[in-house]
Length: 333
View 1: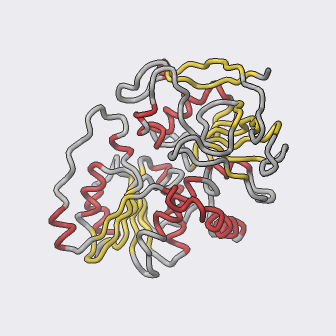
View 2 (view 1 turned 60 degrees about the vertical axis):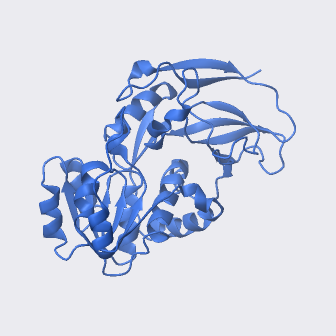
View 3 (view 1 turned 90 degrees about the vertical axis):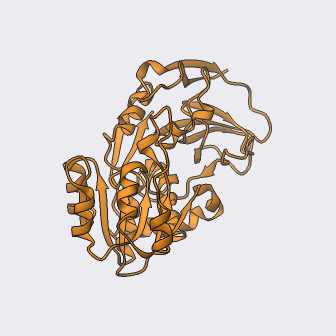
């Protein structure tokens, strides 16, 4: 029988994850049953949500995560040998899959559509869950209008970099908040953001007031914490806020207290909504079709930070949490 390698939680995370919190184990795979498929990972995704999934981080469990894999063997007519699928089976190089999800929070494997000469790894990035998150979280919650000012933090990451570009495509003024001068330069010079702020060296409140003296109409929040406090205090009346993540607190053992937002929410009649992108699962393909066209037209650009080698998945994950990546972070198995 074929064997698989998997990244296993060796010890509970305390603050920032460490290399010693992970180990690699081998697993003998079972024989295929009717309806099942055998998949071999080609790229594994590392994403902030993996750190926040603490309820699944049991010692001995496989690290959660997504991958794009090739079907090696199949007993399912819907999933033929040779096709590629995106699956949420965790950090493992081979998997026997029952395409019917066993749990409500695990999405079924999605066949990768024909994307021509675009890289397969984009199925984990701009044409995958991060892309869908940016597309639906911005357009279907915040409804940006031409001429409005949009702020996104975590702006050089897999989601934030796409949010800002979609906002530009829709005719908005875009301000990004990121954590290095290199990222600020990339956002402004390559992605076309109107303004970018290095929160580690700049006074974000002052910089926002200079970049958006009339206030902020739309805020796509990936970070939470102090950045959330600053941006919401600069919102314009009738502004909309999309809550996507709170990476500033993912490594904290105790969640910070919620800031006093009532004054801003009530006085400026703001609307704020959190979301999980699985809400739009049946419509992801529509978003990817439009976004692939934007890529080919040069309107939507992407960057990937690729780590080579399955065994280096924990290192890539820790680096992503530290903000070492530009764009989407993936592991080439």
